[in-house]
Image (cartoon, rainbow, N blue to C red; front, side):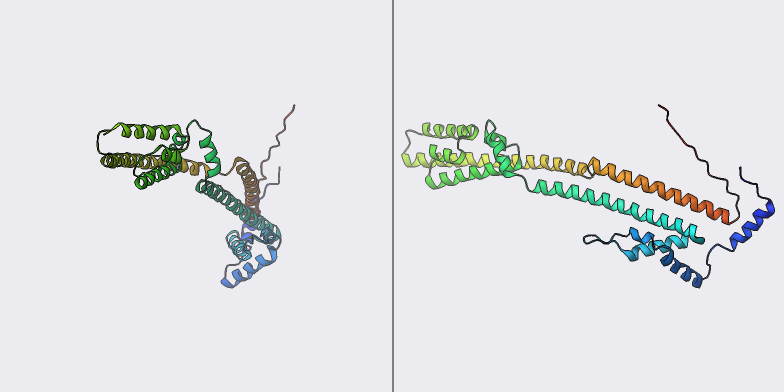
Amino acid sequence: MGKMMSPQQIEANRRNGQKSTGPKTPEGRVISSRNALKHGILSKQVVVRGLNIKESEAEFSALHDRFRQDLNPVGPVEEMLVDQIVTCHWRLRRALVAESGEIALSVDDGHWARQRPNLQLQAILWANSNDAALAMMDSSLGCSILAGWVNNLRNQIDQEGELTEASIKSAFGNSPVYSEKFEKLRLRLLERNKDAEPHRRREENKKEALDFIDRELNNLQWQRKRQSKQEEAQREARRATEVLPAMPVIEKIFRYETKLEKQLFRAMNYLERLQRRRQGENVPPPMTMDLSERL
């Protein structure tokens, strides 16, 4: 246990401490701020100066000056502790910058991946399904492509004057859903108005085929809008998850921050104890506890 100080000694230390609280005049504070350039040389090594990243030395010096003016260190030990506090603060801020950068990369990479879908892979997935056209209706992109095929069929009918087996195959290939749908339409049109004059029957069949296709195009447009809303909801959900960096990155940053915070609080606590003791307070020794585990 340390020796107890008498009231006279405590009062004398307090008076002496009041004489060592640092500069009070503007001129003295200017001189004191210059001391940071002398005592903060080692801490300045924390400023990164690379080819692709350059941290601001002026910003670090300004931060160092603000801490010195606020903490008002006296003597080399207190100067050293202030340097440690500034350095830890600077590195903690860098950890936050790293976290923000990881989040930006994660969200941006996900955005570009969504903006540039793999059309070749998607085409393979559609082709390997039981019916490509039916599978394509499950996405806004597929609905747009189908609408293009149906619109091409419409142009052929408009030019040739009728719906033919060749035009159906040309538009949809071997897709059962659309091939069968338009084949049934073609056969139904052939059975209608057999007794009518050929030119009139041809015009009526053409009009009915075009009306059928227009309804199909309207249905595809509605389906495309519906799929677009669902896909946008999925993109929003993915963006929400991408705000968090990958777990290894989170753990790395967390360990880095935890280590720095321990150093920061230890330096702040030690500086406070020194300054209180310098100002005449009877500061008891810190309580420490060693923990061990026996196997």
